[in-house]
Image 1 (cartoon, rainbow, N blue to C red):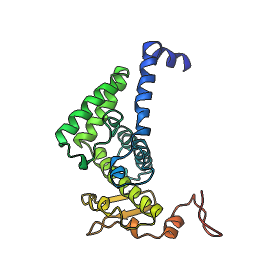
Image 2: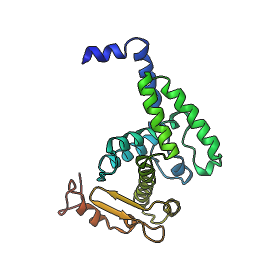
Image 3: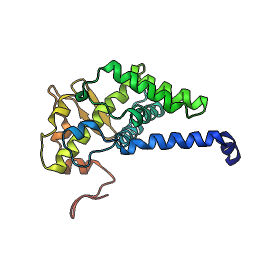
Image 4: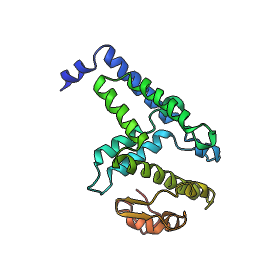
Length: 218
């Protein structure tokens, strides 16, 4: 296996792969713009957001969906932001222009990969952008769900419930989110069951977290 791998990414190919990895590594240092605009301390990066989305996709329980494809879509959907940054609605950039910039960025990024991988990553990004599959539509829901989960965590950390309510209000089109054993169903308004759950209730449902005799810990 080692000889095949070294042959596949030898010489210029290996250097291009390293360039690709360094480029997407920039996502670790691109903050999520929405949190920056709301003066959140130590806002998450785009990479943080994509990672938890991928984990969410990995633990889904829906036989109608291709789980592996959902994970791949989650890992690719914001990849262009390593070049263009996280363009938020508050930036007032038209949707068409945002798409054009990200499309050019994805072409630039994937040019560093062998043809088969180049095609796979670009088509995954395009599938998400056009919402052309059930998996892409589901991952779009995960994108929204991860955002409000993060908003809830920031409110808890700052001890300011409701400070980020507009992030919840922006997810009116999200209908249902089933995350492993937790079921967060959308209500008639834009308040999520997650926000109403007590910390103890959440801990009790997480089998890897200890309860009793002090605060919960990993």
